[in-house]
Image (cartoon, rainbow, N blue to C red; front, side, top):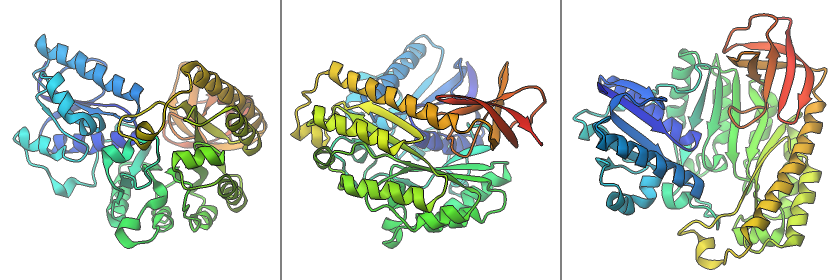
Length: 433
């Protein structure tokens, strides 16, 4: 156990990771030695930033806390603090059930942890972070919360109403990260589409992206988690006119059947969804679309599921994830619908959907064989360098395996000729460096 050291364990999504990075910077400024997600806990103080979005994430968070509570009882750590989404959502229950935890903090009051440690929060460092990602890319969280209130989603119960980070603060953060060597910015939020509405009454995402693209040193901007309803179409000419804005859009559609979309309270129709996809593809040439779909929502019969399958065949998403509906306490769906679709039926539908997507992905990937693509080199493995194209977000999208016949610098771009395609990987050789 190392005194004056704090280990921060960040669970869940990249939005949580950004919070952890800001906290690490505050700890660093306060004079602590810091570590993030170490394989072996060595610090006297451990902070767990939890996820509470879906059941599996909740279980991972609880199991992590239980393991650390055991370590505390055994004297391997001195203090244990818990923050984040799970604590925000289930604070009272956690306090009763986990007395080993010294104190719980929610999603937004983690600054108080510094006070409880006898340190002062430094507002002058609010735009600074200790990166836990490779030094060439970072996540940029532009807002928190959500006003959409989809029937299945617990996010508004955890994070509250949507509130945007002021654009000047974000641009300061981008400049600071560029100065540290970051080239790639993955812009994230629960709802990108609503960025700025709470600040000015208008959608400011196009303005933000335009301003980011003008900053020297910003090589890639990639956009995640746009909401399809009231999509900011003014963004599309900005994407099309800037080479450093990736031809990539992550927009979670969830379903295509009008009855299911209505029951989900998505406030969009099949027809409007198809119009959105057409405009994205027509106005941003060579765009790759990533989406997330849900199977097994109450009211999804065989007809609705067949409609979803046909939609995926027709839309041919370059990137797609899917999950089976699980009832979340406190949501509209949990209060108003019966979760009667058997789990084995949900799993069969999920498997069928993902099998279909694998076929589509293989065909799309095969179309890149023989092409030379700009690739960011992320790391060196035993047999390959591993990189990504502009169409590949870290951790969730395909990677490019690059032949090691010549050395390549990590964190730099290179041109790669694609020689082979797998459903979720490309294989190639660096050329003309």
